[in-house]
Length: 589
Ligand code: PEP
Ligand code: MG
Image (cartoon, rainbow, N blue to C red; front, side, top):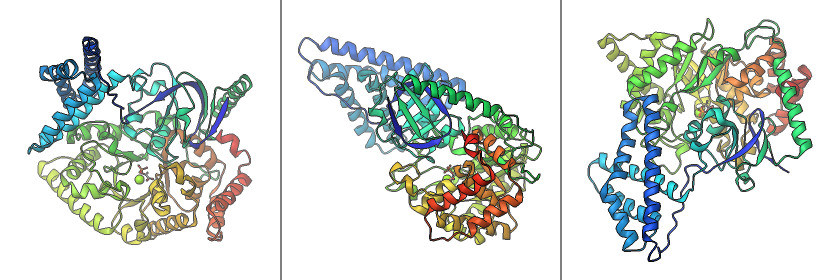
């Protein structure tokens, strides 16, 4: 038995068998000489791999057809045609039989040749097809080498996924029903895998450094997402302790709530608690958790995991469904649809350019303003959905007022075209800015004049203030929500919003942190938006506090010496909280 310490990323305690996920990394291509007399064996291996790949593609096509309609499947139909192309099989046969090259190397030689030919073509459509060769090659190599045989497609029993790291696309592809937990070498509490794990209510531990080399498929592990620990091969007493803790957690969860809406304070005051979601997350379950609306709809997930941009109609259908569902959450529900936030660690095939420094690159609202067709299409879809409920929209990664000025011109133009077409929409749809770049927080007064609300994205605000990559475990110690510089920017943004009479919310993961989220509320945040799974616990905490407690908490932090380390500030906050809620740790288990 060994216990590894990592970063507590998504709360929850689970035990189960290991599933080693190798992901979309480079596949090693073995190269060897095929002995005389073994050529036909090698060709049979190749044919089996082609047949297996075709079967995989056919089943993928039928799943996609059911889920999304024709546009998505065309690309995979082309991949099937490639596999059936006699030029391909005869080229591989020649290399194996005449040159004595093994099947993997022969496949790679052919796809390299095709890639080179297509790269030279003038027509951008054909140049783009190079990626199709990459994709088919990858599938064939996987079938030949068995490299990724135990990937998500094969995840047949409920398991704990152990991986080096997972991209957002890989995470959403995993069958939820069989994922008990995530444990990764890389990542951090605010990487996108972490956000998804929380949105899907899956416990996760990240930053485990080399867990992938310490486990084998099928081994039992206990994953404690609340404390950031993974125990490999637990012995009997540890397993018994785990079971006792599970029972205790169920008892705490079942402890009667008094039925007050989530976010109600002890004295009847309120802090609005909304949910963060992305397309594909059923909104209906959020009602039970207590969400009063949707404070962040991450629209970019409509773009991930697909080969082409979603059409206006597809976007409209997705937004409209989310809007209609969100309206059922409470009488004062609204939904904030965030405009496409790609870039950084959210890369989209075919859209994201290769950049040396994508976190500081042409991302989010910058991308939209330099790709007006994409921006207009999305605004049209959002506006059309606004006819079905209270919709807000906001721009991610705003860094200066020029961006808001430009976006306002585009929005006005889109509204005009909808007017001309007689399409219904909410003319007064509130438009907000995400405050997640330090320049926006510093210049919050000027930004506040141009928008209807602020939503503070602390995941990025902390990352950019501290220059500490939110997904890099090596700098996780610098990712400090209570650093005086972060607190200063939070205070600046909150006060500017209030001076200009606009509401301000936090939609970063820190909203769900029992110490930090409550601090934001104390500092004057009007709404906290978080992964649904965290709402019940946060609601319990607020029910134990009054507005005057929150004022006291804010005064304590505002009065702290700003030259002290972040951890000391955090410790003071925790001490204050334990003074008010002595059984805090029990509630959080
Ligand atoms: C944030 O940065 O806090 C945020 C909510 O946006 P995302 O996590 O999607 O970057
Ligand atoms: Mg962000």
